[in-house]
Image (cartoon, rainbow, N blue to C red; front, side, top):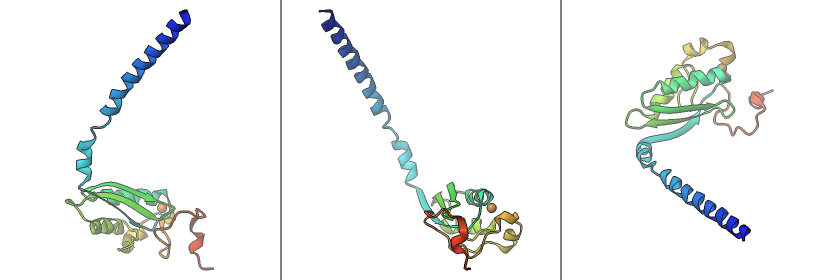
Length: 147
Ligand SMILES: [Cu+2]
C-alpha cells in the first residue's frame, strides 16, 4: 500500500513540474518586436584582404565606424567580412570605401596606398591574395604564392 501511495506522489510531483515548465516555453516567444527591427537590416559578406588579428581590428572598426553598420566580423582564414547595416542609413559602397580608406583591399575598392604604408609590417598583406576563400585549407597563404 505504501508503495502505491509513494508512486502516486511521484506522479503528481512529475505532473506538477511538467505543468510548471510549459508556460516558460510560451514566455520565450515574444521576440516579435526584434524581428520588426531586423527587417530594415541588410546582411552582406564580401572579400577583404588582410593578414592577422590586427588587420581584423582595423577592418572591423573601419566598417563599424560607418553610420548604420551594426555588425562587422572579418574572417582571417576566408579573407571575408560579414556586415549588417541599416539600408536607410548607409549603403554597401560606403562600407567598401571605409575599409579601403583604412588601407585594405575589398572586392570592389582597392585600399588606400597611404594607409597601407602606415600599417604595421605584419599587416602589409599581399595584394595578390585571393579574397573570399572557402576557408577550408587553413594552411595559411602559401596557396597563393607562385613559386
Ligand atoms: Cu595585420
